[in-house]
Length: 332
Ligand SMILES: Nc1ncnc2c1ncn2[C@@H]1O[C@H](COP(=O)(O)OP(=O)(O)OP(=O)(O)O)[C@@H](O)[C@H]1O
Image 1 (spheres, rainbow, N blue to C red):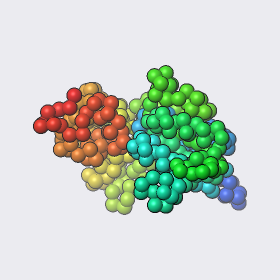
Image 2 (image 1 turned 90 degrees about the vertical axis):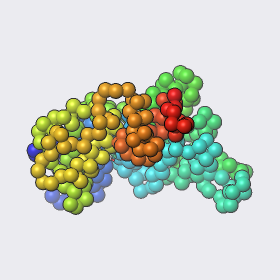
Image 3 (image 1 turned 120 degrees about the horizontal axis):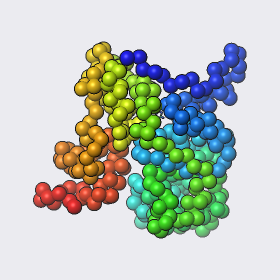
Image 4 (image 1 turned 60 degrees about the horizontal axis):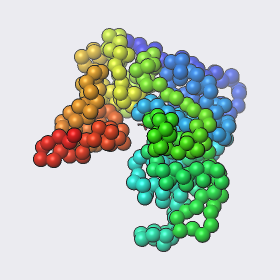
């Protein structure tokens, strides 16, 4: 099957035209693949959003492309020659998040053998991408709010604050409004971050993007693994799949398909669509089943579920699943 490619959303470059202004635009927008109306609208809106310096909050399920959008915002804006510094707020324990974000002076605490400027200062002149902002502990939220309001950062153990010039882009998979209502997220910080909002739909709500994404990921396969092709019925099956891991799950599927592809378009039965990610079945059982099949190795279980490790940790926390069963008994 010849898969439909994404429509040409970008204006063609006239011969002799200076390539400099359009190249970053083409690259950054071209990295967000998919002909669905929601992605077309996003690509039309991003250049304007990137030109402003306002904070942007990107929301969407895991694997929907929040990181891609944050990168495009940086690359399309005037700060593109500056750094883009990312931090995953869910990946660090509370104490480390503080020092990673705000930095510290030499000797500020045991083990601080040298001063560290912190991610916020390191992003000065560029963009600070705060991934999984919904998992930021309340005390760090208060400090971040102060940084946004004063544009000053106070490293741990420092005598004086330092000026910083950063654009903040934050992302979350969770409903921050609900977290604000429950008191888990500060309302004042929410309003500071939510100046502009980008909402990414789950892939199951934009099945028209599946073919274009499939072709995009197939084109990225290393030599010898492609070009993977599928029959029309296999594509139809993929368009009906619920994709709990969204584009990341599709990318993993294409990589797995590349390993079994022998030049013949793949039939539906040959698609490595994991039963773990088939529609139906409750999610906590799927998580436990994957962990059991991988001897409770969370890295392998995350791969099997086609989730990032952070997503698996989050789901385990959500469903109260302990890291390993005690005496073979399942955690509640
Ligand atoms: N529209 C898209 N076009 C091209 N690639 C995409 C698109 N959406 C997602 N991807 C790719 O899918 C993978 C997952 O995307 P990304 O990391 O941006 O998702 P995310 O929403 O930030 O996930 P998480 O919440 O788990 O961090 C990446 O390889 C990314 O490049």
